[in-house]
Length: 244
Ligand code: PXP
Image (cartoon, rainbow, N blue to C red; front, top):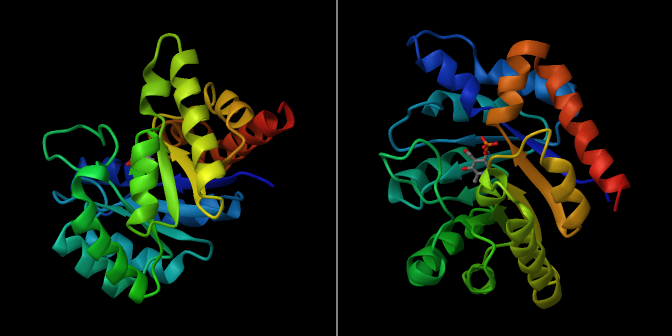
């Protein structure tokens, strides 16, 4: 099965917010990504609205023809927005105001009761939930316990490691655990993925069915254009699959 590529367009909005103007528009970027073959569009509506703003999420809900994945903190404010906008998937992520980007996975084990309530409420509205977690068996089991249908394994440590082997092994073990114990759970991955590291991840962790890629893909698009960048990532993912 082809590994799905969901493009995170947050950093198109970062460029816009740097000037406080109305361009470049992440909505336009999403259209180009879909035309280039992206399987979904991901946005992170942060509490401080540093890149994606509420208008983007609402307009994307109208325009995205593939899958809209809304990343958000597990707060009442975000839950309200998700229930109103109804994305195709909500990915719950940890969020700290002072961080530059999402650091570490969500502690589902430590927040079981609260997350269970939120997953249930979103589920009643027809919105499946993904948990962005570290590659850890206890976090995977807890995610399933609270009702998540998808887990997204945090690949940031893999991306940042000088010797990525140990981090790859953690991802391999976690994905194998998920597939063995929770066969209906969908395993996604993301954070810090680039043209250089995505192929090995896909090759060595075949349980992954979906990738969320943002910063490096948008950075690449500055030079070669959004459609060419999406195509290059698609090619790198396909190449990883063909080398399994
Ligand atoms: N997945 C999640 C849950 C994230 O929070 C992010 C960053 O917003 C990404 C994937 C994409 O990471 P990157 O921008 O490093 O590709």
